Length: 130
View 1 (spheres, rainbow, N blue to C red):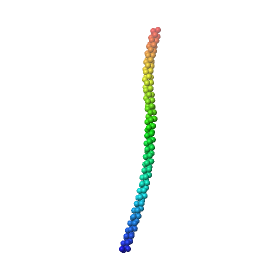
View 2 (view 1 turned 60 degrees about the horizontal axis):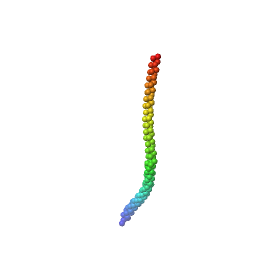
View 3 (view 1 turned 90 degrees about the horizontal axis):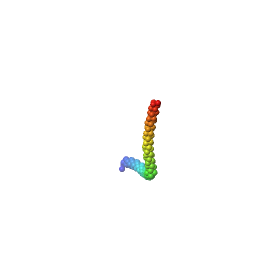
């Protein structure tokens, strides 16, 4: 073989060696990135587990709160509503009673006004007769 051919082959081998080195470096970088991605996935999985735990705790607290509302607050609201209705009935009864009393007072006043007018008429007639 000629020396020139050996130099060309050697040059090609160096270029191939350089390319293989670049490929190996890129593969190493990709392996590092894949490792980082896997680590990130594991961290995300851990975060998700913690979030699920927190959500379960919140759900449990919410259920307890709902039970408490049903057991305590709803009964108190019912009692307040019943008291409101009772007061409304009492006010309505009082209004009816006062209306009846005012009607009776109006009748008495009308009677007294009529009697007073009659008496004044009699007094004026007696004064005229004198």
